[in-house]
Length: 427
Image 1 (cartoon, rainbow, N blue to C red):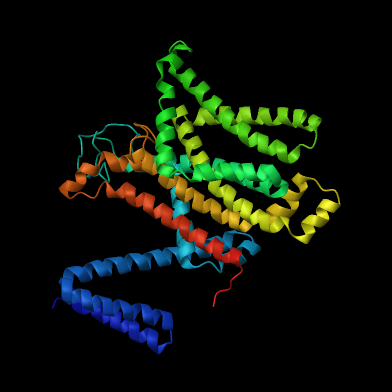
Image 2: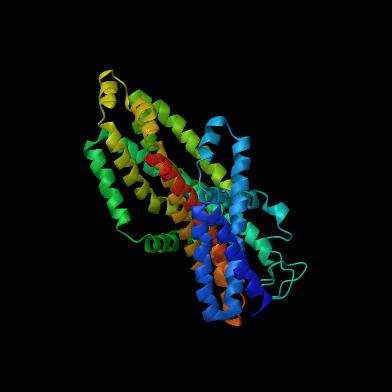
């Protein structure tokens, strides 16, 4: 029996005994359960299995310490009310917030963190890791670590914008349907049912396949004299304006009460939509805007159904009826009465929708219909380097692990928010 095995079991038993002596029941159950599991694995797999158990236990302990320290740091820098809420956050939620913070820093400061350019070829294909490339090179000789950092910016930004648009469209439609009812409620409900009846991945593949070829269509490029940049900008702006007008109509139906209101406020909404569309076309190219709009249309019905259900439970309350009898208009009812009482589940739903959108964009990129090369994207990085798996290399699993880690982290935070919004108390 090696010194490692003796020391491993000695530490576990000493920790279990100390936890039992000081009456730390949860720590005792955790440590002694780990001792029993390690004993069985040691018999089956020998010292190698125990080494993996020790590594996993060490990573979990390190994650717990980082989560605790990050939670205490947030408590010190936020307001008193927020600090009171954060003190009740479990370590899993703190770990999720730390991971989200880390990804946000990587996405915002990608050019400063990445040692090489996003599409810069610096070595031979599939070159091993060295002092210049922490994770080696991909199939074209580009630095995998740099592309992983840039992939955080590209993938997360598209998923975040797509989630915001889906949430805006779905939430507005759900709130308005709950207040107005009647034919509008029925029309919105049946439209959502039609979209939700189609599997999201199949619908995404179909829409991206149809509209994804527009930016490179020769007939479209000829309209601008072959100027690809101008054609791309106009196409992206036009598609954003079309989607924005759908949202704008819902906004006008909420805030406009007469013909004059529709005309004046409609002009204001149109101007805002055009400005936002031009800004979006400056940040993203037309293929990325098509991807954003496709995922927005796919997931907005989910937001609509939840918003309609939550707002429907609020709109029948007595204080809503009292506000209507006072002569309050729809915008007041939504802004001051319904929305404040529906915020908690909607915020939690936003986190879940981000996970769904993020995974769909990564899946489309893996299939070659998402973010197009040479732009770095985690889904396409998995596909491009998948051949390394047959040679025993784990490089393709790194972007896949990045996708999984962010999804798990967001779900940890969402679970905590759902627990808080439910009104339950910890035992």
